[in-house]
Length: 222
Image 1 (cartoon, rainbow, N blue to C red):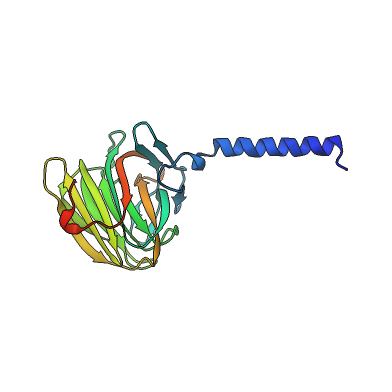
Image 2 (cartoon, helix red, strand yellow):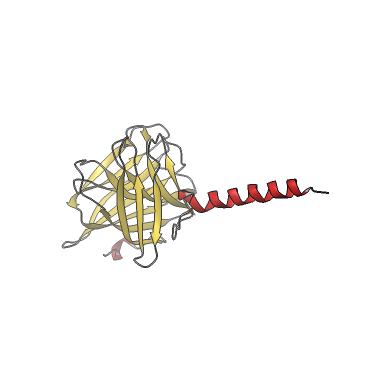
């Protein structure tokens, strides 16, 4: 039979465990997504939370960059099989002197730092681009949109083909790509933020976020 001391110790352990669950930032409400995590080498842990009232995602991340052969950023994500489209309006929470901080929509093969991926990134200077890494450990390539933020970005996957659609607030839809790369049947899909400064964090607000089956490209609109 359990002694009173053993029973007491079990209760203490259980209470400590429950308290840890309550304060764990990775367990915040992430809306339509399943989880959030730091990817790559991170000095300042990131966070992600969903504001149900405003229907907005607030994502904070650090990381040296999302470029070259490895990435470092914060990611709120879910895993999806097959074709899909991820759409969002993206704005940074505060002004910054870092023109290459990034926030955007991301399709990624794995959560490894050097994973193949395709993303639609809004930069701190307002530029928008389709970035991609075709193979594990390969160098990132990019195609730049002529339109700048504020804009609606829509990243679409059809098999191994990825296309970015950019709709500025006062203009027509611009198509960037397509680009072909293989992520496998299933991929991690979500919202990413990179501060472009390993010793600082940046926060982005994602609104009008929608994950849906791949749209008919002739009917894409804001």
